[in-house]
Image (tube, rainbow, N blue to C red):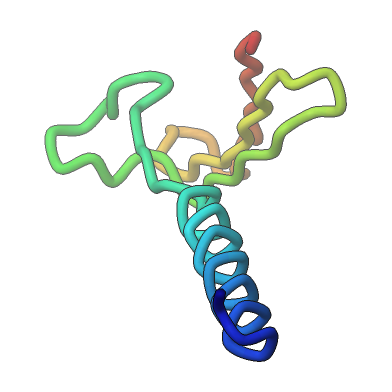
Length: 82
């Protein structure tokens, strides 16, 4: 029979290990992909991109570009269904 303190300590360590493993698996991963290919070979056309998960699970990205012939920057958005 395992002494009570040793049993509780082992149970606590096992539970903590499982919880920490679950937290490690739940960490976000990094992924990037162009919504539209860059207009220029060096890819310097799209700036300040942001992405958010909408309440329904869709993704919404927004960015601006200042490389157009116009003097004022243009703002763009694009959504992607989950």
